[in-house]
Image 1: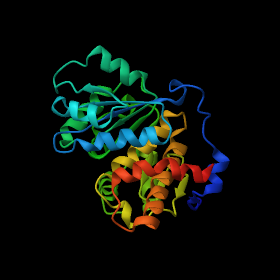
Image 2: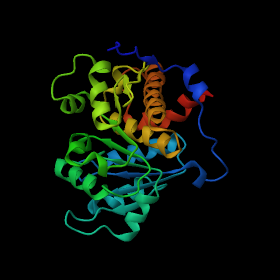
Image 3: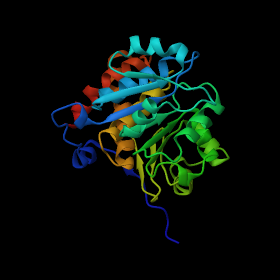
Length: 279
């Protein structure tokens, strides 16, 4: 058996070579992202993810969240259409089903405060015609609770180190090589910190980012950034690499100006400037 290939470094030159889809002349041509998550404990997570998706060029964003915080999200993220989550045993309203089936990318997980809610959402989405599904936070741990054949063909997992270890079933020794068999088993692209791993075994390394990214809400921004690129039409591997790079580079730019204590909301607003470095 041949040795695993070395990671490819995600550089400006690589991203310039890949390019991005043309934005077209309307918001519809730039894709729609649906963000599912949030709770009274963490209402801001879906706001951060939704803003990040818009900041990297998605044309439209919809948010589905708990009824008690829906108005907060509507006010805080006025650019988004906001749906209220049905109860655990309730039928999915036709308008909500139409919205997530019509989205170009669906993100599940940011801000959910109960693992069972994440399992419930994955089961609710199972079997539906969804172009690309991104899972984050509690939804990462729930992904094996649903048959892989029932989930969308295009699946991206945005994991932190604890969640990667949960997928792996043990501590991570080598982030790049340890995630390869998991990506293959789940037939999913996995992003974790400086690594993006594809089911094919291809791996990309990010040499951008720093300790400032370890701040509350940063993972929500990363998940939304990846989802925004997927909504724009990038294939899962490239959406994950573009999203991980843009998120990390936004952090570097903020650290150069402000030092360590920047906020996740500032990461989202810095994303367009980070992308301008590529183009």
